[in-house]
Length: 377
Ligand SMILES: Cc1ncc(COP(=O)(O)O)c(C=O)c1O
Image 1 (cartoon, helix red, strand yellow):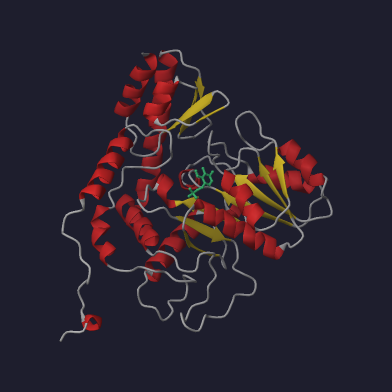
Image 2 (tube, protein in one colour):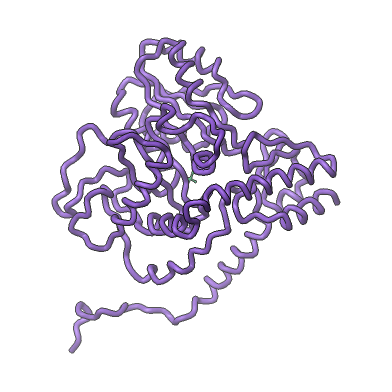
């Protein structure tokens, strides 16, 4: 009798085709994607060639730099991906990082390191920060201060100075928005450091939440100050935004690793320096695939094309006389809130009377034309 323990093929293999329920799901998702222009998920990279990897477990358990005993990982690929992003974000020698479950985990990790180094710190973030920033501060038990924003969504440096000065004797942990969720405004790290200097803050940690805009800004010639060479201690991005990975994932890069790295866990053979422990290796593979497909010039070419679609959107809105504006170099176009029927069809979030369209790579001028006809009607 053959023992199931020695069987090498899957024991529970489904029929070769997907069950109708999942086919319906796929249909719903592909249909929804045609009119989804309000959320930042690129749709121009085909990840389907990686499909056969769904037949195996990929668990990049614990620290990416140590393979460990468990063989079902892709840590070699993760290390290549991290090397790429560390160079892109100008990390100094001694950097560390890992492929996360998304931008939220990246921010959580950055703030965790900040709190570990500066135990008595007060955390600051602007009113335009993503909700995950306040959540990370709450999870870490950090006292949290919300700073006002300028009209374009950038942090109000004068208010940061005022608020930080109230806590002069304590270290500060600041989360800078490198592309806010609603308006894609970019906080300037040099000005943040200047505000902290002026407030008399000596000990500080700055995390750059660059979920969508970090990569496109890194390949922009005349770029704002936002990365590790500009004074960030850590930076995080989302993989499913600019790269449109079908698996939700992200990357965090930190200036230097954990001060006292934990020992290897005996049964895994690798230390656990991450928040999540077991981590899917698929995110790293998808990011590596995206970088392979795009090649050295692909990142800047895609960025240029997506910004051109954003500029085109502004011109179309101008022609129909619809109020709009756009932060410099943003994919995001702000427009006066359209009627509910248009917002629902095109999946546009709204806040304070304004909505936005995010022209990530893969959004076409045809989609914009269709949207404008709907709006004009
Ligand atoms: C500025 C910003 N930070 C963080 C996040 C959270 O990223 P994720 O969805 O990858 O957890 C988002 C998501 O929209 C965002 O816009």
